[in-house]
Image (cartoon, rainbow, N blue to C red; front, side, top):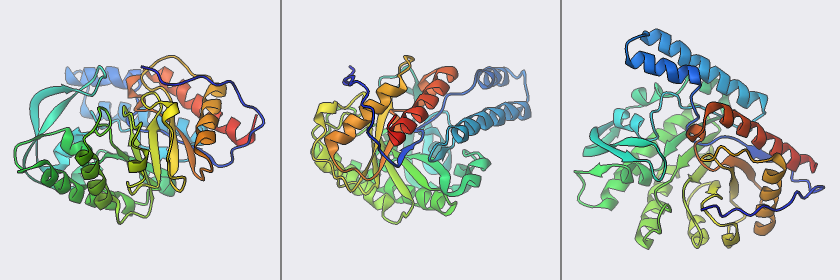
Amino acid sequence: MRWLTFPGPNHGDVMPGVEKYLVGIQPRTEELIAGTRDWDRKRITDEELEELRMAAAARDFSLQVQEQYSFISDPMFYWQDLIRPFVDALEGLDSGPQLTRWFDNNTFYRKPLINAYPSISHRKLSRYYFDRIWEFGRKAKVIIPSPYAIYMASEDRYFPDKRSGVFSFAQEMERVALFLQEKGVGQIEFVEPFLFFRKPAQEDIELAIDAFNLTSQRLNCEVLLHFPFGNIEGHFREIIDFNASIIGIDFFSTPLSSLTDFDTKKGIAIGCIDARNSLLESADWVASFAKTVVDRLGDIKHVALIPNADLEFLPRSIAEEKMKILSEASRRLEDGS
């Protein structure tokens, strides 16, 4: 269900310092998709597939730079889904046989099996990122699941209870986050799609907060906690308790009318580009909607425009148009046009 209203353009209001960046996995080019199929059928070599992957990444990086994105995101073309790299990089996790739908999307992931205490290998995790991402320094942005999300995405065959399992992942994901911070990135995005996809129990909210705060306690880069597919209506007071500098809200799942009690000391990333619909928003509408959000919240010091979820759900050509619309909307907010 769409919760968004469509306010008209509000010209003449300047909103300085509006950031814009991507979230989640980006869609592969048609050439890379075809090349991956050819590789599966042994029609091309590993080296040829890697050339296609590098070309697709170069195109993605170039567009983000061209559009002057505040952070440059790794497009995550080595990631089959948000969870799979951690099956490889975490000892104690095995790839299970069960294909599970990724929320209410027409995509699937292989549910991991927790068979032992998880232990991270940074060397294995590193190969899932393009080397070029580290060259962007403090403008680089990387994306990982929250500890609660990676536990909830798995089948637990080891821990005696949920709290023990989630906290074990919190400890390992802290090591992951510190490793990425040492690489010099400017923003780490933690993705939390499980907590508010359905109405959560209070004990689950408290568990997710405690685990996340353990994971993020020693980070000094910008920390974005993003809630794709989540309706956080009625939970704004609890959102304040997450140790994140900026909160990403999916406004195609969360009603605009529910915006209350938000701590304005935190930044807000406004998910106002629909990553699950090929309909192109207008830059005027995106700018106007973002202005409406800020007007409802008051004096927000840190505002960013983002897609509401991974653009991988869209064809590459549509996703690139939406990337440009996001950038244009940010410019219109900054200059009041």
